[in-house]
Image (cartoon, rainbow, N blue to C red; front, side):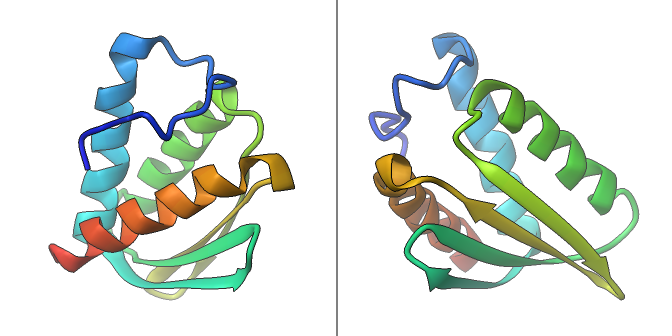
Length: 111
């Protein structure tokens, strides 16, 4: 899914940097995703395998993504051996979460 048409206009990340950021998320999900669920239409829950430096990597990506896409709300919970990442959006951005869920699942299947 190389087409970034799903990225909303409200994203303030410069257009030329978007493929790089998406690639960072895709790599994280391909390497670390252990489960994905959708407990609510406006929330995505991801379980990521932990490991050395993974918590810092997740928190760094979350911080940078929050800076350009303020419509996302990220919640990170670290447990033994895993990181739970909840991603929530408002109703207006539900389609963005839908696209992210599809991307995440596809990246996770590469694992």
